[in-house]
Length: 447
Image (cartoon, rainbow, N blue to C red; front, side, top):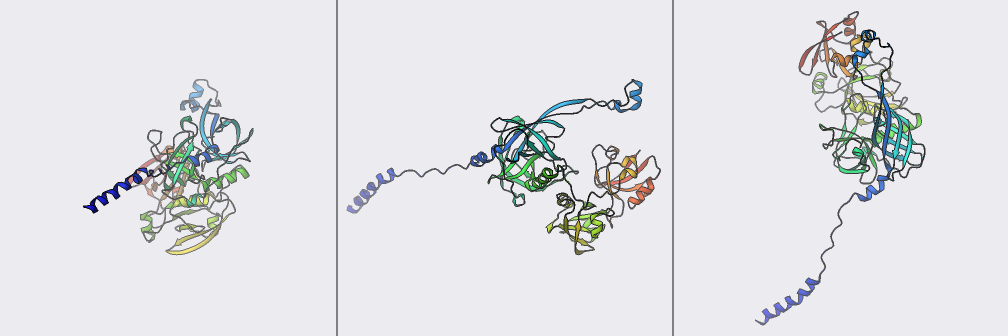
């Protein structure tokens, strides 16, 4: 009994000590605020004024219509003025340089840069490269407050946290966050050089040209596009990687334009069907050479139709888009080592990139083919002519041709290559093309 009371007394004596103990300090909530304070002053609003040709009724382009109504034959289309806004990133405060999207300043006659402290400065276009959608501006009447250091985007990984800063819908210096959802996205515009970082950080109209930054406060990309059914954010946004931005920016500042070296080949993606026809293993990745331009860098290096280019400069190439981007970021005169497969054997060649090497001009085959990039189909696939690409609004596009169409016959006569297509179309006002589109066989008239 005595031991019981002693235990109770010991317990009671401990109670004040427990009651007096302070609760553990709450851990601070995670915050992006330090990063945003560091980089936000280097993100600007870009206001653009300009003019574009006003759309008019297509009848006004018809000479007979113009004569009937007594309209002058050479009357130029009217222009309409416009205003638009986007974002930009200060990359060199001392030099006054700002990077943005080419489409933000397209057709601009006056550009106004608004800083975080509401100062307005005038800017001029140093250079613009629509193919990569990068433009460089230079402030002409004031000093810039800060700049962002460009990261090595090759070190970015899927799952990294990122912050998007810009001016969506005119709401200046809006901040959103998310992660890197994917890397190496392409195919949004076949005519452009694309190697996008995909992110779920909210990007909306007005964010174009703004910053995508890492938690270290470095620029990993320039926000440029979204996939959306509504016109607003749906969690799929794209940014141009900082390494591509740096390459284009340097050339624009130094030369005012981008001088891209050309390999001089027409290439195709390596599909399972092509792998089977070429006797390649299922895991082989690369770009299939469908055509080699005469006297091009590729021809001089010894590249042949049917080769599969698997690496550029020691970096693996997964497909045609990666090869196109890798070469497109190099200058005329650059030498590059190419790894390729020929008849199942590994080979290495060195090519010195040259000026643009013209492949077959489709307009010389038939006027309705103007704007189409045509190439011989790969060997082993039954022959024909592949439509590598089609320029928007061109006669080929208006005729109904699409990228990846395979032309197999002209006026009911089979063709095996471009030479036979040219011969079949000689002195013909109209053509009846038979082509394969996916699993379908189509007839397409050309006039």
